[in-house]
Image 1: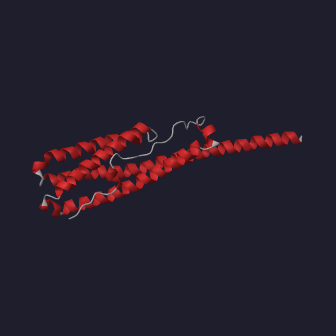
Image 2 (image 1 turned 90 degrees about the horizontal axis):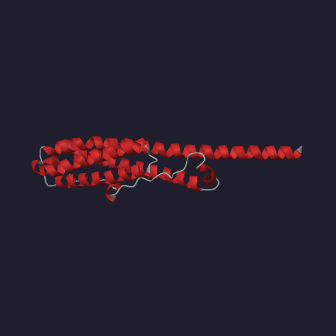
Image 3 (image 1 turned 135 degrees about the vertical axis):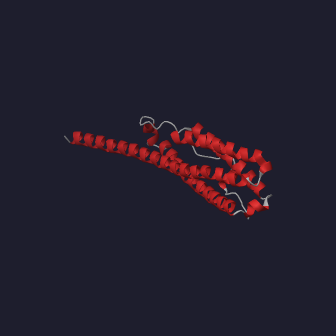
Length: 196
């Protein structure tokens, strides 16, 4: 009789432990997916600001058409990368593509902002100053959101790879590690310097 009670006690304890591991894996996965949605919001805002920035510059920078087109092309590429990553933030290839596209966009925007320095009238334009300030603010938010996402991914991956979760994670559908979001260009980690 006592042996049966001990056996059932052990079975119940194991069941509770397994359920706890499952629930923690789900909670951590949901946390990093939510963190990615915060990045998505900021990147969409960034992508929405860029055409306005280009349109404002277009009137002043008639001879810089190539640079303006490069910014729009990089923005469109980054939007496609964001759509793919948002569709499956657990896909490492999609996260890597997004990081590369955002790095290229940052480089194109950086070249545009460097050219703006050569156009005093454009630099003094109120609309351009407001857009540049909003872009700088958004860049800071992107950096903060990316850091929060990468922290969430690290916590998820660490728990998933730790014992005893590692022995059950695959059985619960947590086969692949989550991918960090790293931009190709380190310049995006820091907001562009704009001086008016």
